[in-house]
Image 1 (tube, rainbow, N blue to C red):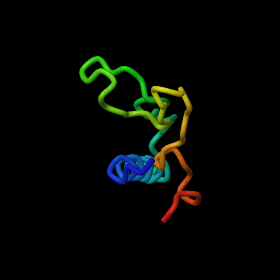
Image 2 (cartoon, helix red, strand yellow):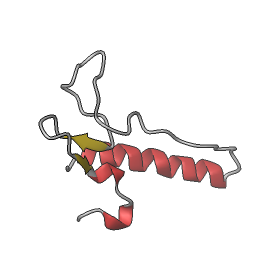
Image 3 (cartoon, rainbow, N blue to C red):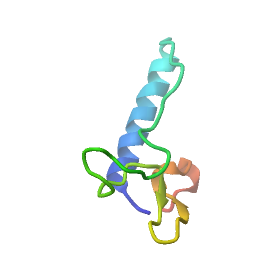
Amino acid sequence: MHDPRRTEFLSTHLTALLDASQAGVDVRGYSAWFLIDAFEWAFGYGKRFGLIYVDDDTQERLMKDRALPCATRPS
């Protein structure tokens, strides 16, 4: 699943966390909004915020680009 905007969003934020940590900020963690696509109160099942796509028909789970380490992302 390709979603370059959200992939860039996460990458930018994680880079900022790394920079802050290297500058001495006590960074204890980071949590993505959702692990898997799920019901969202404001948008129902229409928005897919998760790191892992869930096929509604088969319940198959597929890793999205944003969930993959940078070295394994397709170019």
